[in-house]
Image (cartoon, rainbow, N blue to C red; front, side, top):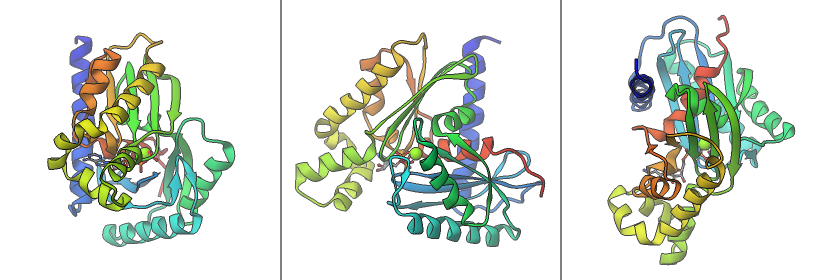
Length: 283
Ligand SMILES: Nc1ncnc2c1ncn2[C@@H]1O[C@H](COP(=O)(O)OP(=O)(O)OP(=O)(O)O)[C@@H](O)[C@H]1O
Ligand SMILES: [Mg+2]
């Protein structure tokens, strides 16, 4: 099979996983097969929990906006613990069985102490944390890619991972993400952060916002260029909620000069990858 054909097959598998997870978040209940494992993504903008069964099918999930983590650092431990514990409780109720094993993740460059706080948040919900992963590594797992760059543009940061021969050879994390787009809109219209976020998330507004947001898009593109240009790669995958912003992909592609692709549900890629990489325990 040709390299590009293989890549297509792998990506479509990741796309199917993301779609199945989107269905779970929309309330679809699937009958799980075998042992369950959980991925918890404590993000700057969202906390997402994904449950997979032993055949790696997404069977349940929760997402909640939250401001309890800043750039990979838990800044509101009690708030984070309350949200994750409630999510786990509700998921157990929906699934009709207890959840035991989990993985969580941190951005590249996170200190040992900050990794521990993320782990404690998840453990305080009663789950046993089997691994603390790197966020871009988790995203790359879902996409199933062997070569290329995965760029996770989240709420607070842009995480970059370069994959060569199915191994992560480089990671970086820079403090620019969706929050910065919102701040620019808030400043431009002299409105609150919350109002600006609502305006940004309404995709019918995004074409009109493009000129206002273009400088931040260029900044994100220049960050990606700076980190990936030293490697011989021919594709960049954008994931994370902020990569959905209309026009951003084209700005990145033009600036970096490398083919750029966004999966259908970019926000779900990293949380799903955390669950996929959670070692299979035995219930
Ligand atoms: N359709 C959309 N268009 C534009 N921006 C979006 C869209 N959906 C989500 N976002 C933005 O994506 C960001 C949240 O993405 P995500 O959940 O991946 O971040 P996070 O994991 O919480 O943050 P981080 O990884 O930086 O800690 C927010 O800034 C949100 O406004
Ligand atoms: Mg994230």
